[in-house]
Length: 414
Picture (cartoon, rainbow, N blue to C red):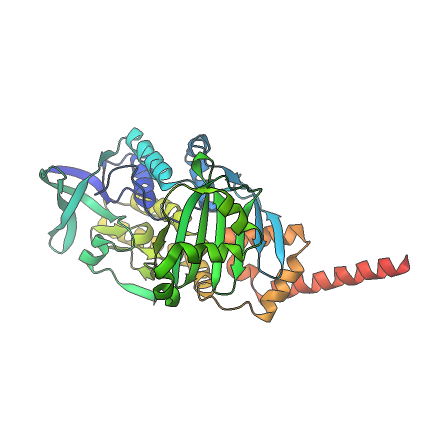
């Protein structure tokens, strides 16, 4: 039996980042995962601006760029009636998002954790949590070769995803839960020319196109989950039909080469979980997960890891102080993510844009500064409630009308 300060279960983004940051604070950390390090997993791919800023702060952004994941500074947002072209606003020293393959990002974070002193064990299955007097104090598990072990720690962190076995074992409370709303399909293509990231809104469809590693393009399509039964009879044909409705995207994709299978899942839950209790905590999708249509999952996991580590560092040795710090982290997490969660629920409902939204899109066209702020909202750096407030939307729409009137007056004077 070995004693650690913290055991982290799950070596994906949230878990690996948590382990890395804890080790850099001087804690003894064990990081385990049932899969092999560097294996693939379903993902949104996008690391939005707040996540990119964290990777830069942790000294890891250079490794992301060295991996061949291209920076996306410019985005084309096509609503079907209006096309917005703009750049992301600068935030904490970064002005681009990245869409690395998870085989790259997860492995990079684990390597950094190992370099910081984390004990990493992949292909390790956690069979049970260890309890003492109603408090989690460790894990029991085994390697793929069948070698069993028991490991103890002051804190066990579940970073084991949306169907977290840790969350189930501790009966973490669930709230703000919504049923799955979309089915997502994506794959990777070679030879698809791009000059910017691309987002498309179409009736009952959402499409995202971004560059990833190895000069490949990741193409993603979302549809209402109610259509899954009909779509699954020929997912690839349905995927391509959607792209054909997005300008020349269908032609560009058909002219390229799909290099991997089409990945499709309707398993896209939306739920908040209470992320802490006696001897345990949750991070990333284990604590909060939402539909991928807004691409927030990776950035949320990185921010969640940073907040959890700050809480742990403030009082791991003092149970009362730790509990108070974890409660603050819980409140901060919900306050930070709640507005984007609400926006994601609205977007993933596939409702047609309302009249005010259509007027907002029209007002943004040809306004680079406001388009940049709009993209910043989608990226999570401009507060959602502030940007979509009636006051701000009216300011943009009325400002656009005034500008149009002034332009017409000048043209008439000529």
